[in-house]
Length: 238
Ligand code: ADP
Ligand code: MG
Image (cartoon, rainbow, N blue to C red; front, side):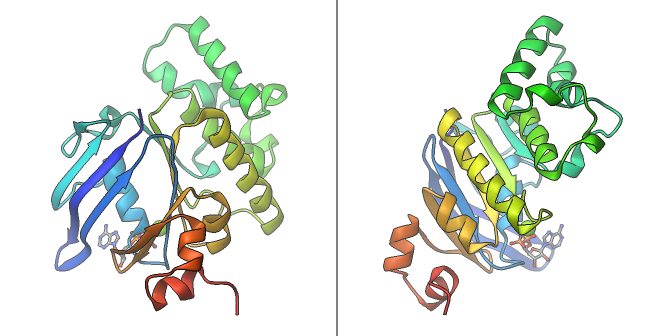
C-alpha cells in the first residue's frame, strides 16, 4: 500500500499551464520530497494527488487503482496541515480523535488508536491539554497524530515546518524522519528548503515551472545534476 503513479498529469488555471505534464512513479514506503522555488507547482502537484484540485488531464493511480476522479476522502491519503489547523477549543485527545469520530468509530477503538498515536509522537502526557497550552513542535505533532489514526496509505505534507523557528525546524525534521522509519508509510513532503530535501528524502523530485527537472536520490542529484537549474538548487552552498 502506498504506491502512487502520475501519468501525463496536467493542471491549467485558465490560460496558465501551471503543470504542463508530469509523469512520476512513487514506490510504497518511499520518502519523496518535492523541492523547487516558490511558484514552481509543488503545492499544486500535491493537491492534485490529494484530490483537492481536479486534473486538467492525465491519470493518477494509487495502489493500482485509478483515483483521478475520486473524492479526497476516497483516496486513502492523509494531508498534514500546519499546526494552526487544530481546533483550539478541543483537547489534544479530541483533536487527534476527530477524524475517527467523524467516521463514527466505536469509542473504545478511538481511545486505543489515539493513545497508540500519542505514544509514537511522545504526546501521551499532553492528551488532556488544549493546543494553546502546547509548544509549536507539539502542536505540529498533534496535527500529524490526526493523520496517523486514519492509517493512510501515504502522508502528504506541504511545508509543514515553514512557520517554525530554525532550531525547532531541525528537531521536527528528525522527528518526521523518525516517524517514517517507524511507520514505513509513503510520505510526500513539499519544501523549498534544500537542507530538508537533502536530509529527509529517499527520492527528490526537482520542480521548475511545473516541470520535473530531475528525480533521484539526494546523492544522485548532488553528484550528477542533469542541468544548471538542478545544480544551482541542490548543489553545495557557494
Ligand atoms: P509552489 O507550491 O511551488 O510555491 P504553487 O503550486 O502554489 O507553487 O503555484 C504554482 C503556480 O500556480 C503559481 O504561479 C501560482 O500562482 C499558480 N496557482 C496556484 N493555484 C492557483 C489557483 N487556484 N488559481 C490560479 N493560479 C494558481
Ligand atoms: Mg506551496
